[in-house]
Length: 325
Image (cartoon, rainbow, N blue to C red; front, side, top):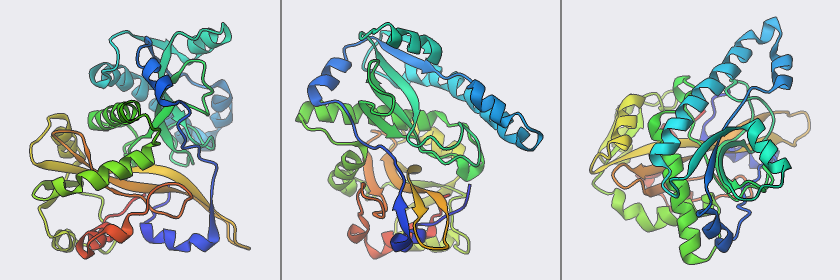
């Protein structure tokens, strides 16, 4: 996957958004009812069509990545869905085939927690994929493209490890539930991007005085850790991914972590220029409360907040110091 930095978004006159569906398709009452349903956690399966497409010598690595991702995801999703999903204790695990059979039988009694792609170009876990992975919480009768609620999954490609960590699942599952609860309480639908923007504005003052942990390989080329720390002006530490994971899982006090997650795909629409690449946002989460403290979501797409005008000079500089892929 190509390395990119947010400066790429200065090319907005040359790009257009791909069809990424970010909307929530349930109203507050429907989400309230959804919480009361027994939950099916979907176990994804290998797709025979994908296996055939990748069953070629030159695609051997992609095939191995695809198979490994499915094994790793199913193993971890079972564990962390049980640990971090609190809406119900009525939880079952069913394969995609079993869920399709229930849908075909017009069963409308379940909620589903599932992995979805917000763009269908590419395959799970393959380096060259062009999709935005998300966890969806939705009614079994809902269209898989028009899910009731969703949250983008963090990227682990920064360290070339396609398997998500426990902290990644905690972040996604906990914040998705908080987003749904906010909608029910306030009787107003806010898609994740707008919800995250609102929480960041309300909570940003809580970031002051906390130690901010950043993955130690997130520096942009040509930047130094020393310069990034100076630009930030606070307690900024570059740590291994394992330390970031431990801090969030163990609810470290007075500590926050930076996450990177994909939220869209931009494509060229200029003559003689052809490219397609994934766009990422950065989000800071409180380790103790799992609350969103800060958000930077580039405004080149039609959705999402552009909070760059709210950054201090130091904050803007440190965002330039940190790369995304």
